[in-house]
Image (cartoon, rainbow over all chains, first blue to last red; front, side):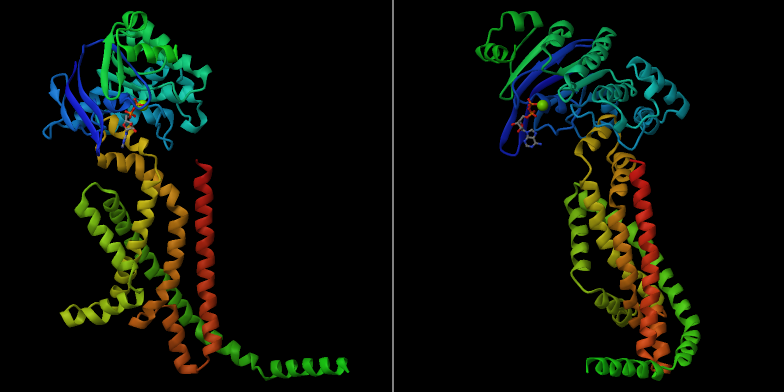
Length: 240
Length: 239
Ligand SMILES: Nc1ncnc2c1ncn2[C@@H]1O[C@H](COP(=O)(O)OP(=O)(O)O)[C@@H](O)[C@H]1O
Ligand SMILES: [Mg+2]
């Protein structure tokens, strides 16, 4: 589903990603952990080319995305993304946030888009907030709308970049709940998070990143239970 | 002593007021009124069209300024620097008196609208650029992440938010343009200022007529300010 091949990313002289290689299968939930500045966000953003790839290749369902011939807008329709800061469109209602891309990008009919949007609002438990603008929503509600917005394009992969880090503690649960449901439905997910409970329960595989490399990976049980690398142990001892 | 001094003062003032021929003033103003109104209409017309040209041009220039294409951005930057770095009056002279020597004859009206429009395009361009850059980059990223093209993201996400933010600045720009439009009187456009000068050339009542001209500008600016403030308030409410 996703294949990452010797991926490098530089910001000017700063080498942020160094030789990342990985494969993520359909339906897999991969949780990415690691210290701040280790390149987690950058790696995630390379997967839909929000960051230009310096060298190497990322394949989404076999299509190389670091390639001028690839229509990146088409790839992005298959790859939903959820941001730490939600990034809802403040001048659009919840419903419009969700229907905009299907209507403008997929050229879906207004009615059909609305029907899908209401189903999604129902799914994230916010049917009553359809006509509300983002500034009247709580953080947790915003993030759930943002997830619905990404799902409206009916993506095959969902990328989450610390989706609960900007939330008040009491709102973290409602967002993780939605993500958990999504995982159970078989969505392919790559999740950068500090929520170790979520990683343990929902994750199929954990990647530990440090200084731009994947230092260690494995099933949650193994990574949390018997980490092999010193750096992993060190990191886990600090956050657990 | 001081009382008599004051009385003298008052007498002097009364004498001055006596010397003013109120009837003559009334007649002159009545006579000037149709011309001043006609001039005001011309000023409004020229300003409105120039504002239109300025907005269209300004949005294009603003978009060019924020584009990733270095050449496009550079051209826009050069345009802005040239038009902001030279006096509007000289720009008007070049269009109206300069171009004919290249075989290009513009009517005064066309030269005026073109000059004001090109000039205001530069200022609006900078305002639009500022507006676009004030929008959080997360907005562009979110729009692109659902598959929108750069153009779609600009059109549906960035510009609508930017426009809302720059309304006050745009309003001020257009009020400035309304006042600057008096410069077109020197290239034979019969705007408010020129109508005033034409009247003065017949009646020699510089003080009176220029006061009247100023008053007309003031009223127009006053109304425009209210409109801008009103729009601003309405936009705030919908936030
Ligand atoms: N747009 C950028 N320009 C320059 N440096 C950046 C940029 N984005 C991230 N970085 C740098 O890249 C490194 C990795 O950042 P990031 O991927 O955000 O880490 P993480 O998400 O793991 O905290 C950091 O050192 C950060 O300062
Ligand atoms: Mg990050």
